[in-house]
Image (cartoon, rainbow, N blue to C red; front, side):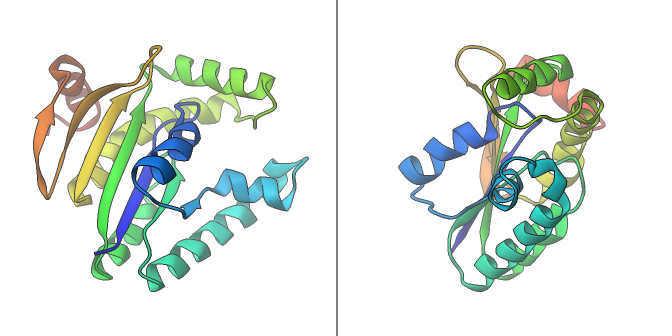
Length: 193
């Protein structure tokens, strides 16, 4: 059974950094589809100017990889519904879908992490976009994505070291490591479900 891994979380959470270790070194996954990386390849000095085209190429690459039955991963903030159909298509094609959500404790922390990334030569995301995506990502995590993923891991990356919050899914029992945070997130963003 091929595997699809989704690296998700707010801007600045550490999705790409985590992916570059987790995917090749632990999961032996060599295909990682990331719209930011695609945009940098298309226009290294102005990647924001080709964001739409990079997103289109990303979706085409995902469809291609699904058709080849290979293990792969992609990165997203989960701030839109757009990957629900992608996940359903992958599952219909026989994929097991695992979601890794990297949590930050506040949108202010996300803004700060993005600013730090920019100071080190990384790409900028406007502050209002970071705030909007932060809230939508958490809501969509609980209402759209967790219910359809075979397994999930939620990790709090707000401190010096990442800390597992919970894991579970359709194919495994839910194990809660930080019940205070998990219950807060579910009540605030998952309509108490």
